[in-house]
Image (cartoon, rainbow, N blue to C red; front, side):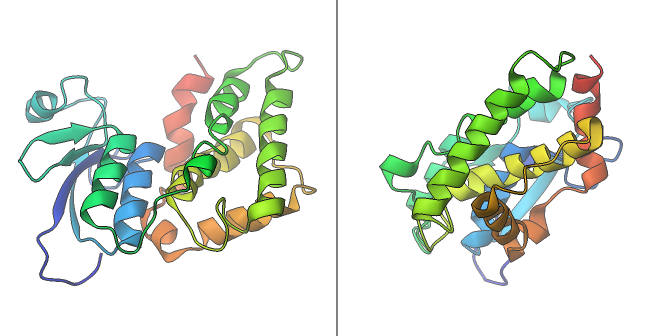
Amino acid sequence: MAATSQKPVELCVKAATGTDDVVGDCPFCQRVLLTLEEKKIPYELKLINLDKKPDWFLEISPEGKVPVFKGDNGKWIPDSDVITKIIEEKYPNPPLATPPEFASVGSKIFPCFVKFLKSKDPNDGTEQALLEELQALDGHLKEHGPYVSGQNISAVDLSLAPKLFHLKVALGHFKGWSIPENLTYLHTFLELLFNRESFLKTKPAEEHVIAGWAPKVNA
C-alpha cells in the first residue's frame, strides 16, 4: 500500500480457509486488490470467514458474497466488475481501462477451467474446451501482446491474472496438468503478471488455493 495522507478505502475480502487473519484465495477479491495496488490507493481490509459469516457482514452483503467495497456515500457495493469501474472513475491515474474491443478477451477461460477441474470423465471434452480458450489467448497475445491490449497492463489483465493463477495451481495439484509449453506467448504473459509487485503483494498462498478448491473437486 502506498504511503499517503489519502484516507484508505474499505474492502471486505475472503479470509483464507482455516485462518481468519490471512487474505484468502478469492480471484475476484484479488482482482480488486490488484487494481488498488496498481493505482497506489491505500486500503483497509476486512477479512471475512465465508464458512462462518459475521452478522454485520450479512447486513452489508445480504447474499454473503465478497468482495464488497465501501463507496463514498457509505454504501457497500458488491461485484468486482462494478467495484473496479468505480475505482477507475474515481482514480483515473494510472489509467487501467481496457479498450472495448479487448475487454472480453479470455473471458471463457475461468468457466472452462472450473468444468475441467470438476470433471471425472477424461473424455467429456472439458480439457479440449479449456485448451482451445488458452490457445485463443496465446494467439491474441502473439498479435497484440505482451499484455492483452499491448505494452501496458489494463483491467482485463488484472481480471485474468488471479484466475490463471488458480488454474495453474489447482490443475497442477488435482490433475497433474499444466499449460502446454508451446503456448509461449501465454507463458510470457503469466511470467509478466505473476512477477508484478502488485501480484506478489496480493497473491494467496498456493495451499490456500488448493484448500479452497478441494471441496468442489471432491464433491
